[in-house]
Length: 626
Ligand SMILES: Nc1ncnc2c1ncn2[C@@H]1O[C@H](COP(=O)(O)OP(=O)(O)OP(=O)(O)O)[C@@H](O)[C@H]1O
Image (cartoon, rainbow, N blue to C red; front, side, top):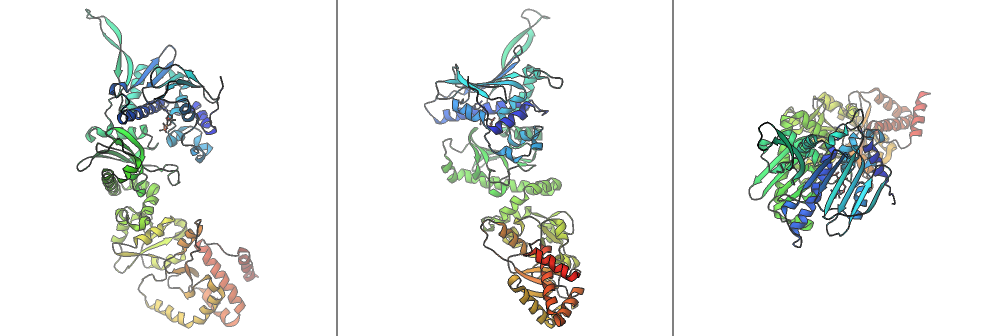
């Protein structure tokens, strides 16, 4: 029989599974049971919506059979089954193709991370089995097939006999080793406990023949063993249970079982609404950021159930983009089973649910911020960018929902603070909320432009995310306090005597500045005496809406429209350099040209902007050295 090869990525994954040192190998059973349950969901859904199919609730179940003598474990289901193509396609390739490429070799080595990141599902059976056999008959098909693989060297598919629709997965367990005892996976007691632990909420019965002991009939001291089929799981879906009966562990188990993420959820929200619209939902705020979160591949959405039947895996309409990190499910009695994706978008019930969910998530985040600050900061470090993006997008229409959830690093507190905290401690004479933008906190800390604001004792928020300034522009103000960049022309700081002095100086040396401006041509809008510089000789400030950070970001975009910030070169009149400029202006215009060009380029460097001609710049430095 022809042996087919796994697709390259699957092969790597399989290798990892086979050689896995993952300590929780038992999760393979959870994976197979959850696949079986998904397959039953599919046929169940079909039976409810297709009248030609018989509907008999009792015929949907999962059965586990352990054969101690042959060391095999069989997991069968009465689900939708797989055709030959399905077997090849679903079991020979990784569904989320390309995802492996994101991870580097080291991270993958112990197979631990990968399980979490991708929920490798079916492949996890190779952690405990040498041979995996899948026998399946698809709904509507007359033929059944057997798929078999011993791992990395590929798989075979052949026709097979099977009467009923569904799938059987037979695992031939690995030989025991010093470290691992695979016999435990044919041990009834152990299997029962694994099922209870991970799959108790599966909605279909998970049946298993178990051995009991009872008194022999007519005897009061002789026992006999007997076999009986038992349903191991309690079957009530967690979202239908009373919140009071559930522990955080139950929610965590559900989160893992559903592959919402490998991390533990940072927070869960269990909603039961019985009003104008009835629904149950379990939502999770993840603790860690999914590896593909900020990529185009990431798909937001919640699982959508109609009265216990899964009708959509990722219903995007239930979550606004700015809460796209939320995982979970919604079950509503009020949705029709036959609803199509297009109809859903217009469904009134769904819109109500989405609105309700939005406010629940917001409240939850707010209470996390209030009550568990550290946890909130962890969350914010992972997903804060998305919230800021939410403020910016849709023309700022969501700013009211989001502004109280924002945090920025503070020059004063040296940690993340909220806008409310900032505003509430603003001194009376402080007009604006000040911010400074840059690549990192360390770099911003050194920006000359911050000098005056800091000297006044005002707090500065540090913006290091691309989106920060754009979001703030959209917000415009918080509690009626406007935002102001420390580089902006007008800092709104009351002028004292020395500052009035600078106005006089500006006037006095206007010819010098005009001359310098001419030399820099359209690189700057003006050259001016600085009011904000205290110790540094030079800096750039901006006039108008576009700041230097915004210019940088806009320039890096694919269809940049060459948007420029209106830059002003500011000179510190109290720095010795100013005296040199004055002398050069009076006696040596060539020198003035050299100094002007040097100062301008220095200001660019401070801003992290590229110098147009670095060779010329270094030659200029040499000129003043010799
Ligand atoms: N018992 C089964 N019956 C029918 N189809 C199955 C069964 N087991 C697996 N499949 C098919 O094989 C596919 C691959 O399964 P696998 O467990 O590897 O990934 P998944 O379930 O899609 O994703 P994940 O496990 O990450 O949620 C499934 O999507 C499903 O189409």
